[in-house]
Length: 348
Image (cartoon, rainbow, N blue to C red; front, side, top):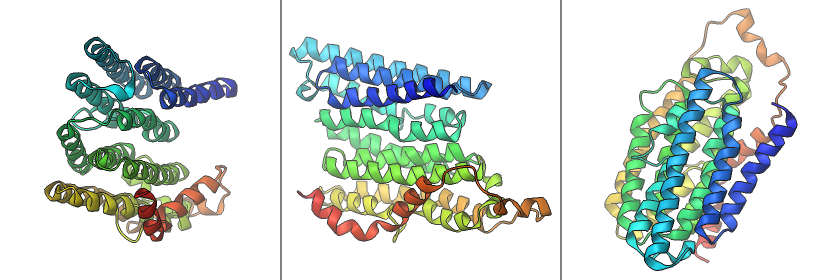
């Protein structure tokens, strides 16, 4: 892609998210979301491949549906209450419709079906943007409207953690596994949204860092399926030793960074007298952990046919920049000791 076009599209992505962040009026927020969608569509379709075009079409239709729902609900709210302000949502009907529309935008269960299919049709770089940056603007709106009806958020959160765990069990394509991992993590964030918005923000940030390092590991290895992971030891032995820890951090095992948000969320849910909800969420994390362990097994405990060509790539210099991967991996593995400081900041 032409660098000038790429720069324009990336600026459009940034501008769309910023407009949504800065807006207090529903029409302006909707406009930011539309700019975001229209900027990423050419990035998704840049590889002229039927899978990429199919994924782009599915994504565009889904996002257009969600945007139409948001426009409809905000107009209904203005008609019922006379308010266009995002934080002045008083009527339960528009609030519920907008919550479901934003759930469709980020891919929460039960409106998640588009996410694995779309992610599977994209390359890893665009998939990374879709899994991280594209979640920011809808989450900003969810944090602002703070739905009064807490039941709908708890149902969406629990459904997402369960579907994210169950859906990834029988997958062999890494991008689909990462899509279900994304659904499960978003479920954890939505569960705690109404009780502790700052904790949701912390979980979102840790999810971004862990997902960044996972995508960069797969990109460096040029892996798109579980079978391709078994040759990664020949390409980058050091990275192959660290990658299982990154995956287990995504799964939320101590003493890695990924354990921190899950620990704090379960603690907060218990304080809110929602012990059964916390228990179901914790049990669903075990489902996710199974497929991370499966990836770990494929990466470190299986050896591909040991031919001379297969064992030499690690001696070659990589053309890719590895500094972002190094920073993201270090952050993914080592931040758990900072939990007391984070917990203190959350209570401010």
